[in-house]
Length: 79
Image (cartoon, rainbow, N blue to C red; front, top):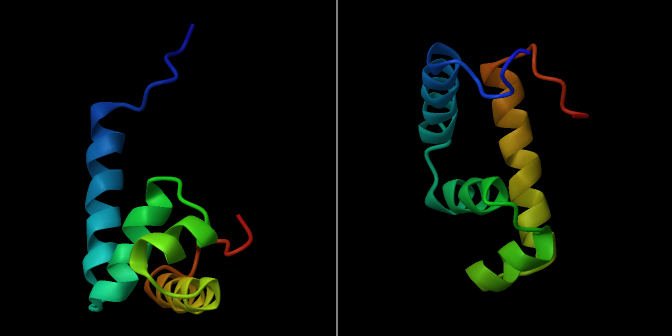
């Protein structure tokens, strides 16, 4: 039975890719939104933690999506 855990090589490559994309944002506000989203926070929870509106979080997420698509055109924005 194959393991559901990623191989160490895959995990290392995934982490490197995430770090590259994350650091490429170049904006602390965007980085905070990414970090909170990766923790599983909703738009509303992120807004409360960052003391901003839900709409601000949604705008930042859209900026992040556009950035990711420029960095990696093979990413499907609908997933």
